[in-house]
Length: 87
Image (cartoon, rainbow, N blue to C red):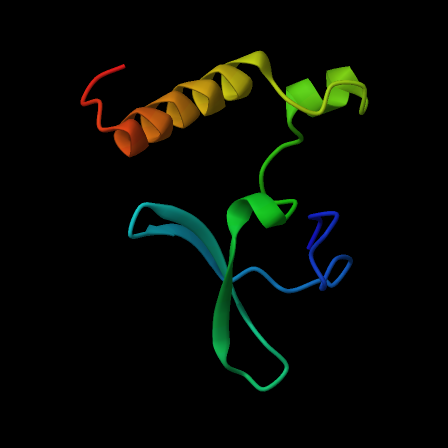
């Protein structure tokens, strides 16, 4: 588990498999009781390191494309509240 804010960060599990469930990328493992469980793949080190995060080295927490998408979603949400069908 590698996500910096996950309570199980640093915990290691043996990977059973990685697959998409309902379009969500998941990794599966057995917990201490032998029950099969899963995590979102992006919370683990199964994926290669993110090139943007490595290059920015913490100096830029958000990608421009992500900020533009957020702005678009906020505009649509605001327009719906105001009763406008298009933005």
